[in-house]
Image 1 (cartoon, rainbow, N blue to C red):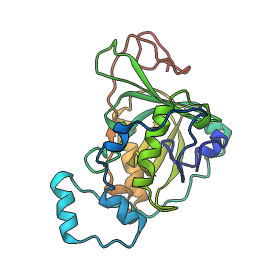
Image 2 (cartoon, rainbow, N blue to C red):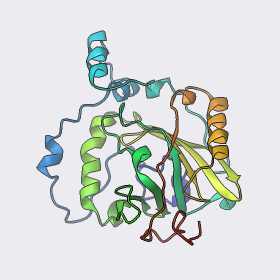
Image 3 (cartoon, rainbow, N blue to C red):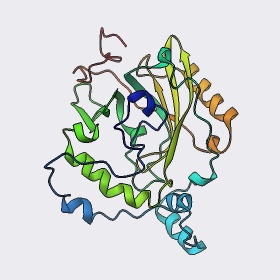
Length: 265
C-alpha cells in the first residue's frame, strides 16, 4: 500500500515500506544507478516460500541457502494477527516515534535494511509517508542520516530508486508482502505500538514507543510477553534492543531529543 494515504491509516501497516507495489519516484529523477542493478540480490527462500510461487524448495536449495545465511521460520508460517482496535484512536497517535526494539533479520533477509543494528533510530510519520533518522556510527558526535520515504515528496530519489530495485525481487507477487500493527497501548503515558512486518526491508517485529529512545528492561519483558501470548508464529522471531547512546548533535527530525543531554523525550 503506497504511503500516500493519511498517516493514521498508515499506522495499520508496517511503518517501514509497507507497500504492495514499487514507490513512485520523484519527477525528473535520474535512472537507477548501475551499481544497484549489479548487486547480487537473490530473493531469499523465506520470501519465495511466503509468496507461494509454486517453485519447488528442494533440499539442495535449502542447503545452498543455509551455507551462506542462517535460517529462521518463513513468513508464511506466521498467522496474521488482527489489527489493533486502537489504531484509529486519536489518544494513541504520535507523529514522532522511537524504534526501541526490532527483529534483527540481517542474517536471514538478503534485502534487509538492518534497522535493528542502526543507532538511535526514530521516525517522523506524516500524511505523505515517513522519514527514518539514525546515527551513522556509535560516536556521540556522529552525523544523523535519514531515509526519506515520503514517495512523491521525498528529496532522496536515490533511496526511492533503491527500494524499487529490491522490492520486486523480495515481493514477486501481489500479497506476498504484508504487515499489521497488531498491538497498541499506553506505556508510562506514551503510545506503544507493535508491528509485524513481512516486507522487503524487514522480516520480523518493530516496537515503537513515543516516550523515549531507550527501552527499559520492564518494557522489553512486557513486549516479549505480548508476543509470546499472541503466538501464531510471532514468537519465533526474537526482538533485540535497538542500539542507543548519548549524542551531541541535535536530530533534525522535529521531535524530541531523547538521549541528548538536557533534552526532553
